[in-house]
Length: 239
Image (cartoon, rainbow, N blue to C red):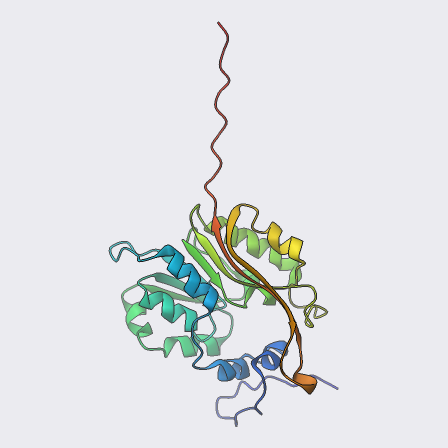
């Protein structure tokens, strides 16, 4: 049986109710955004922002919000005085983000830039104090993930942070070939130049019964990049 096709017609009736992860599994992002409407910012983002503390309004730092969806995290970043570069590949995500309160003004005064692009073609700004990727990086194709992660790592300066999620290899979606799942050692290896401020492994069944049931295996991460190591001192000559 062919998989259900995403309903992208804004004039069509709403899809049957179901869990957000069912919509995400089939990449029906319009249905996913509908299920997630009104949800608060992700805990990993909030904790990362708290770790930074208040920002200088005369020199607001830049955050990249990768896979921003309808903008729940982008809005929080703007409300806390950050500049934001928000990316998503789906036009409906961009439309919903642009409709959020305060976004039009942020676009007008340059505090917000929006990029509609997928992870394969993504060109990140050269540096950002925070890269936030809430449940988005696993949807990068596995053969493109190393390149994407290298660009994320290159954009974060010493003292900057990453916040977001990665999916583990015991997740029920791991057999799907279009997304990236990592073992715990693989996930930890991405952060060997970082201080892990949060690394929570979630490995549990979902609460939904029947076909909606899913086994979750994911990592919730906040990491601060270490300062670059100092060059070795020159050898002392002998008299």
